[in-house]
Structures are given as structure tokens and as C-alpha cells.
Image (cartoon, rainbow, N blue to C red; front, side, top):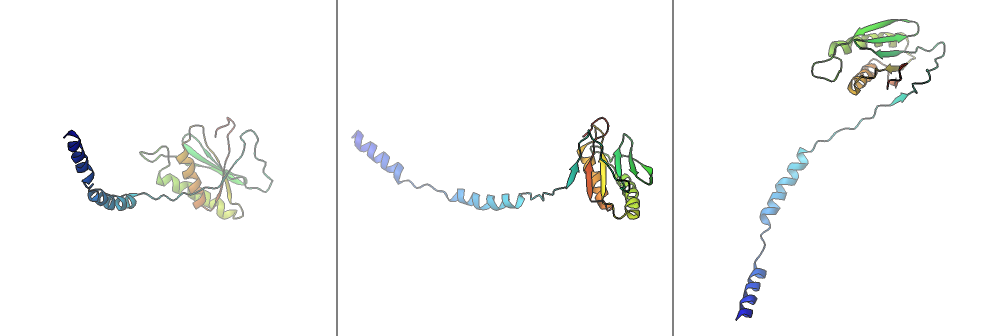
Amino acid sequence: MANTFRKNRWAEVVAADLNVLPLMNLFVVLIPLLLLSAVFLEVAVIDMNQTPSDTPVPLPEEALGLTIRIAEAAYLVEANGFPPQEVARRAAPGTAGRPDRATRLRLAAALRDIATQRPENQSVQIVPRETTHYEEIITVMDVSRAAGLPIASLVGDARGAI
């Protein structure tokens, strides 16, 4: 009688159907929801040159040599044949040193003045400090690109910052 009981019990377990319909309903709702909530980012590449900090960049006599130095409280815009300009640097609140809108506009105006007088020059050298944040360097590159100087190079200062 024990064998018969086991057979009947085993037969009952095998005969039961597994109801997967609720699980399939969950997947039908969950998969489109996850696909719609996915964030698609556009990856952009910024072309730039990096020169070794040990050797100074040789400039021909007629080269403009446009340089933006990121100092503690200002941006120093220097170019051959132009007087140096100092743009006061104020950080936007809540950012990691990125300049505020007024600072970006003043820097763009200074660069645009030089770029319009020397349209053959399309390059600018950016000299950051050791403590300059990455976001600020990218912002300065964006400002220079908007001012008509699409080729940006990072250059180390005398202390080898970069």
C-alpha cells in the first residue's frame, strides 16, 4: 500500500500545470518600460594636442601664439602683437570651478577680437594650473571654439602642470 500511495502522490505532482502567465505578463510590461527609461548619451570627442611640458613650443616669428593662462583669479589672454588681456574669473555657484556666464562672455569677446584681426590663426594654447578642474578646461575649450578658434592644445607651465 505504501508503493501505491507514492505512485499516486508522484502522479499528482507531475500532473500539476505550472502557470507562467503572470510571469509573462510581468515581462510584457517590464521590458518596454525599461527600454523607454534608458538614457541614450551622445558620445563626443574633442580633438586636441598635448605638448610635452619640458620643451617650449617653438613659434615662428609671424605666428600669433595665442595663449590662455588659467590663473588663480583671472584668465590671462596673451598673443604676439597684442597687449595682454586679463579677464576676471568668477566661478558659477555650485560648480567645480567652472566660470559663470559673464566670465565666459568676457573671455569669448577677448578671444573673438583677436580671432577677427588674425583670421588665419585657428589655434589656442591653454595653460592650466595644477589645481584646475577638468570641467573648467573643457569650458575654456568650448568658449575658444565658439570664438572661432577650433584647435586647442594643452600646454604645461614652468612647474609642469597638466
